[in-house]
Length: 194
Image 1 (cartoon, rainbow, N blue to C red):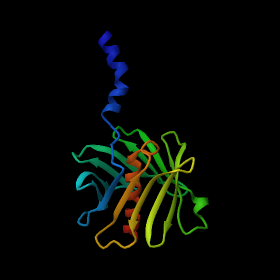
Image 2: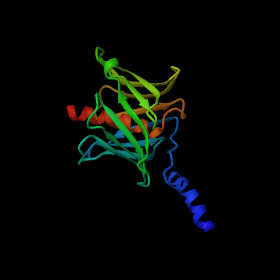
Image 3: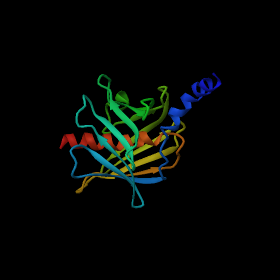
Image 4: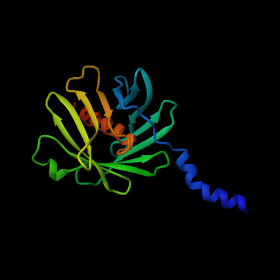
């Protein structure tokens, strides 16, 4: 009886242990694969492949799977069908929501760029973006106090697919799985326009 009770108490923690948050370096690169059936980006740092994110070919909306180097599922992301503006929910490997990327439609309405809010699993804003697009695409993410926590950049002209550089200055604010989804989503949207 005691063993059953101990297992029951530890069960919620076991699912967390099977679904760890990846530890990514302060700077890494997402390189788009050119010969792929769908949008696929390899996550690399200092010549080492850390994982990949792939857009699902058959899906009602844009959906992505993020796997580590060994092929273990770290996260999935799904664009909501019915939402005012873009909204992408990100889930861990146990299908628990870890956060949301939400377009700020009213703030973006009369501007040449789109702004986003990054929400935690409970729907609370933990960060927001400012984006500029002139000769590059640069997306800066700020915490609620206005400090830069992450910058996601790519050159405007990419002859060999998208190449994003991600610089994280604060690893505690945003789950890195959400950062990976942002670059993949932007690449997917741009590819569908071409």
